[in-house]
Length: 587
Image (cartoon, rainbow, N blue to C red; front, side, top):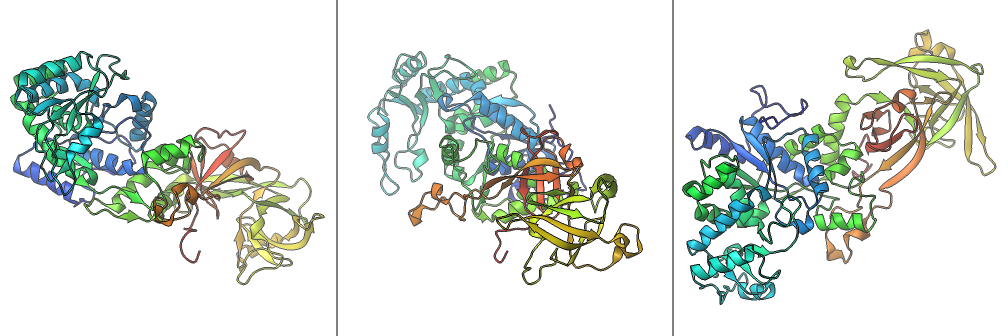
């Protein structure tokens, strides 16, 4: 695998021609390299495989892998799989897919479970040093003894067990002698500490659950803070990048790394060497940064799970979901998400980004490279009565108005066309510049048409328009440049391909769906119009798109051929984003 950290040629380059990023994390890395503290940079992305990654993880992925790439280092993908009852190999595969889709690859694929033996030896070392003890308090009793933010905790009655007794009990825990929840191994730090994380936190718990990698080999599992810190030390991580909620955990992180002292322990180093792991050269440094928070979303894994399990969405990859799988199916691109991360920047200040910033990043990416196609999603027929029955011709259209390299395509044109229903108004509102009775409008690339007749059904619904195409306004004719206020798009009815068009919008109607101060839950803020499915018509060149191919449907927005359901015989397109922000004030 590549050690560069980046595999997608569309990913931001890391050569000298790239703009130099100046955020505080990169400044730390530059200083560490300049001082000689590190000669090589190692980072890691450490997800727990207990769910699907969401858009917030995109920031961490771009930072972890991006730092490694920019400074010629290496970034590992490490699954923190220490809680087997909530983890699943399906999540592992999805996470690997998400990382690669975003444009990155890992130097090494690792798991916390790779190091279970190392963690166990480290725990025995802590016990031998008098830094850890086996505690028989129940979970409820531990909470009672912990104290509060204003009151110190109380020592466990088991805190002063001898080293010999603790080693014996811990080894019997390892042997599976005790029932789940009856004992824990706790660090012996300070029950009066102002930092609650240092009040003798648990290092190991008994959990007789089969593990996806190690099977039934272990009836005890390390706690996250213990495994995470040692995992970084084991892999020689130089900069452990975490979100701000881990800032209060940093003293515990440092305590674990310092007290275990992998670099100074021959037995542990031998255990690492036996597993083909690198020698530990330096203590990892944890650095925290703010999460990516976006309004109109929920990012709680619990709430995302509820949306799926309660049937409020159509699965984890529902295009309305803010999982990376959902965003991908919606038509969001890796380049757009990387652009979003660049625009948001790296800081220590928590803030909420407006959803329009996310949509703007996608628009900017797709505007530059998405081919143009014509589609009609609310069709009404327009018959050009001065063309003969069976008339058919082809017109040449540019695939992209700003990119000649994308070439041209042939678009069929005939006597009967589909146009958008909203492009005709029998009683036009003020400023309406499209088709009206006895009025003229330009058909994109085809000429100028006048509406002569409006045909309705018995209920008064317009079912057909009839008009005359000005022959002098056809492409290449003298009247082709005659000034007309409006231009509309169309699709030849004789050649159009019927398509399912899924019109997606924001999943929630309020900026803070998590805010329950109004007396409502996030479920009550679901947008009933977040998904509509209509039958429209697309030109043949759109129907033959490959799954996940994106287009701008002219005048309508950006759409993508569905990742799973689309085929040339039965096209399915998802609206990724409208051409303009329809949620902005005044739109």
